Length: 402
Ligand code: ACO
Image (cartoon, rainbow, N blue to C red):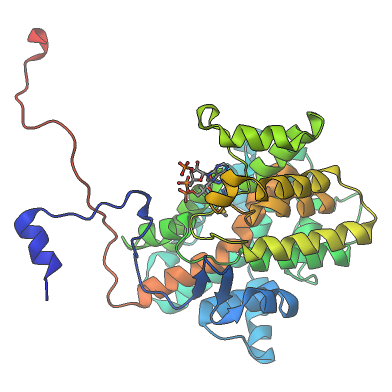
């Protein structure tokens, strides 16, 4: 019976929830997440089921349109994406302007933002056909933009997309082929990459998705909204944790593999060090994505006959942390970023590209949320309130008297 809106106007009452720990920003039908039980479902399908039976493009379709596609619909969707894999030739010159050691996430966010300068027709949010083409363009071009950023860092010529290949194979081709050397895509690498992209594809109102919704709620264009989401994902407390985690594992290995020392360091609040790839705002149990990735990691390393010391360090670190009271009391478990880096390393992907791979995986989720938001008549511009702790009214003293 209480009208919160009028109560707020009468009393100035504001709900304060720093970090939005328990504030719902929307209703959403895309993803179900139970952090206590460690359950994740896209559109009602368990993440384990999707990872075992689907390819990434099927899952992208599912997230965006709500149902798994029929074979015909899937084929049309794939072709629609393939039509757009090239980037405008003029965009290639952007890369000349970036320093060679530029972080690929900075390049990704900038070039995606710049897509709105090339596709100005996409600004019309009232034209569903244009919006759909913009989505196809993003799905198609993100791997190309990403692979070019790697080629730039290597000083190698850019490799055009090869539309005979599937989504993951094509990305690996653009990363590792050169005009001098054809790159024969290893099906195990493509399979592992496909799985990683699926488990990253959506995670309800996480920081980057909320950013995409926040920016989109002002009716900003789709490219601007996704570019902002990429910026949010880059942070080490979010998607950037996969890069930070491998850097940490390398440091532990170089330091003699003494995992206990690092677990103890993470418990000491004074030094600001945290175990990267550990803990989650919502999961208070094993992150189901971490379980799937760990199994894949184990399988891939065995198949390749690879003995990555970082995998051993990661397993030991997990074992020690999970038996430690500090981690038990706070329900801190490995998250999606804990083992993914070991797989990326096995595939040959450099550490700076890890979060870029996360962005490629998360894109369908961002698009699905953007569409859902715009389709919802209840959507209003996102505009949180604050409790002002600044100065009361005071008078300006002229500069010569200050
Ligand atoms: N190492 C050590 N202590 C930790 C860690 C960690 N990785 N994560 C949380 N804690 C501690 C906090 O210090 C805090 O302790 P306190 O209650 O004694 O103050 C308690 O656990 C709760 O942590 P918060 O920071 O309040 O939890 P929040 O939900 O705000 O943060 C986050 C979640 C950012 C993921 C955090 O766990 C973290 O920093 N983890 C490391 C970075 C990381 O792996 N991020 C990727 C997350 S998954 C993703 O975004 C894709």
